[in-house]
Length: 343
Length: 164
Image 1 (cartoon, rainbow over the protein chains, first blue to last red):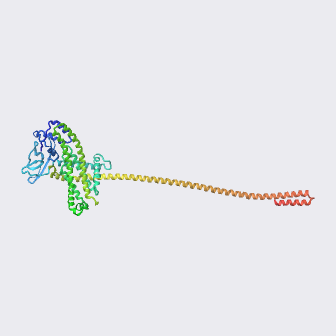
Image 2: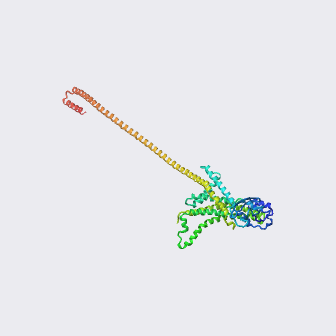
Image 3: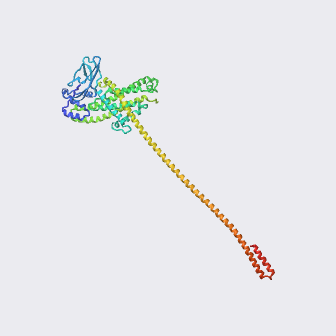
C-alpha cells in the first residue's frame, strides 16, 4: 500500500539527509515513492505516512527494493484455512487480488463478498514478537548459563551487564511493593520488565516494527497483570471491593460500582500508558523527519535531523521508564491484592 | 481508529508464543539466575559474618592471653614473695640458733669462770693462810713482848681475813 509522497527535488541530497538520520530509516520510504508518484506530489498526507509506519503491516518494508514478504495465514468459513506469501498481493508495487483474497487498508477481505476473514498472519509485529522473544531467550539463557559456569566467581560479560538490572527490578520494584511471597511473582515481573524494555528498544531500531506501541501487545500484557492480580487477590482485597470498610450504608450503592470499575481501569491504564508513550514518541520522530519533505529544504533537513537525534535519546530514556512503570504498577497491583489488613 | 483496535492475529500469536516463552524463561532463565544471586548474597553474608566472628574470637583470644600473662605475673610475684619470706625465716631461725649458741657458750664460759673463780678463791685462801702464817710468824718474832698489842693485831688480821 503506497501513499502519495512529496518528492524532494534533489533526491541525492535528500538521501544524504536520510543517511544522517540513519538510525531512523523511516525516511527511506520517501526515496522509494519517488519514481512512481511524481504525479501525486502535491498529495503529501503526513498523517497517512506516519500512521503507516506506526501501525502493523503484512509486509516488512525496510527500504526501496527491500521488502520482506511475510506469511499470510487466513481462515474463513467459505475457503477454510489458507497459507501464502504476502508478496502475492503486489505486482510491481501495485496491489492485486490473489486467490480470492484482497488486501485493503491492511485488512484481508474475500474479494467477491468483501467479507473480512480471520487473519492470523505473521505480520510485522508478530515477526517483531518472534524476534523479541528469541533475543530475550537467547540473552537470558546465556546469562543463566554464565551463572552456572561462573558459580562462586565475580560476574562477567553479559552477566554483569544484566545483573544490576535484575537486582534493581528485584530490590526496587518488586520487594518494596509486594510484601508477601514476592519471590512467587518475581520471575514473571522480570520477564515483563525485559519484554517491554527489549520491545521498546527494538522498536527504536531503523526499519523495526512498533511492537510495544501496538495496543494489542500492551492489552495482552495488561490482561496478564489483570489475571494475576485478581487470581492472587486475598480476602482483604475482595472485601475491600465489595464491602469497602468505613463507608456509610447509604453510600455503598455508589462506592460498589466505583470499586468494581476500579478493577478494570487498572489494566486499562496500563494498556493505554505504554501504547501512548511509545506510539507518541514514534509519531514525534516521524513528524520531525517529515518536516524535511514538507519544507523541501536542506536546512530544515539538517535541523530536523539534529532534533531527531536528541529526541531519539529521549526515546531511549522513555523505553527504560515505560518498562519500569509497567512493571512497577503490575507489582503495585499485585501487592495491593495480596496485602494484609491494615486499617 | 485503526491504531486503537486490538487485532486478533497478534493476540493469537502472543497467546501462542507468550505462554511457552514465559515458561521457558522462568524455568531456565530466572530460576537459576535468582537462585545463584541469592546463593551468592548468602555466601557473601556468611563470609562477612565469619569475619566478624573471627574478629570477636581474636579479641577474646587476646584478652585470654592478657589474662594468662597477668596470672603468670601474679604467680611469679607470689613465688618471689614466698621465697623472700622463706629466706627471711631461715635467716631469723639462724639468728635465733646463733644467739642460743652464743648464750650457751656464754653460759658455759660463766660456769667455767665460776669454777675458776672458786679455784682461784681456794688458792687465795691458801695463800692468805700462808700469808697469815708468815705474818703471825713475823709478829711472833717481832712482838713477843707486847702481849696486848699482839693479841689485838692477831684479832684484827683474822677479822680481815674472814671478811675477805
